[in-house]
Structures are given as structure tokens and as C-alpha cells.
Amino acid sequence: MEKGVAPRIAASWSLDDRWSFGCAGRARTTTQRLGSLNNLASLYHIQGRYADAEPLLKRSLTIKEKALGPDHPDVAESLNNLAELYRIQGRYDDAESFYQRSLRLLEKTFGPDHSHVAIAVNNLAALYVEQGSYAFAEALFKRSLAIGEKALGPDHPDVAYR
Image (cartoon, rainbow, N blue to C red; front, side, top):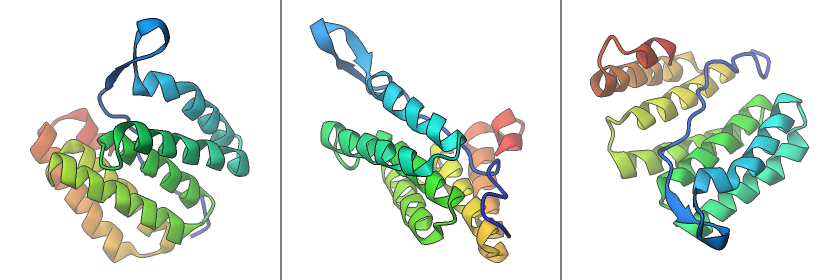
């Protein structure tokens, strides 16, 4: 399968906002502070400017790891974003490593049956589809579905779209 064929299979997501204080004591979330950085990286990603997006995504990851700690769930979002960038470029080994780190972090933080874990499992499965590893992908898609149904209910719209 050619690279970039299954971009819509992978889900994007963000976790609940975490509060901190910015300049002059104004309350702002980590997501808001990093929003411009991530938005610019997303624009470059959409434009196919992967070499421009990668350092921004790496910077976002570094900032989150330093500010929140390496085990904070928001770090998983940055890991997922880098994995997605690598997947689109056909850098499958890098993508797999970052998807797996994101998944492990989310499982550690939320447990194996949380909806965020279902998204991470789904994204790893999408990578395996692109690599032609259909048996691995099928097992992970089934796991993602089971988690989603358990966490959200069988009739929740996110179960249908993941």
C-alpha cells in the first residue's frame, strides 16, 4: 500500500485541558499556550511541509515533557502527533515507536479500557494497515472497538467513527 493512503483511519484528539498560569496571572491551559505551535505544525503537515512540521512537533513534545513531566497524558498527544507525521511520510519504524509510547503512557495513566486508549490502539492499527500487516491491524481494530463500546457504550457516535 502506498504511503499516506489511509490518513483518515488515524484519529486526532486532545485531552482535557490542564490549567496553569501564563503572563500577568491570566489562567491559560497548556493546550492554549502550545496552540500556536501545534497549529503551525498542523498547517505544515496539511501542506505536506513535513520537514517544517517535525521540529515544531518535537519542540511541543519537549516543552510538555519539561513542564508536565514525561508521564503526563498530554505528552501522549504529542507522541501521537509525531507518530502521525512519520506515518504519513512512510517512516513506519519511527511512527510505530511513537504510537507505542503514546499507547503505553495512556494505558498507564487511564487503564486499558479508557476511550483515549481506544484511539491510540486505532492509530497503531492504521499504521499496520499501511504496512500490510492486516492480522495485527485487525486484532487492534477489534480491541479499539471493544474498548470504545465498553467505555462509551455500543451506540455512541465515536464508536462508529473510530
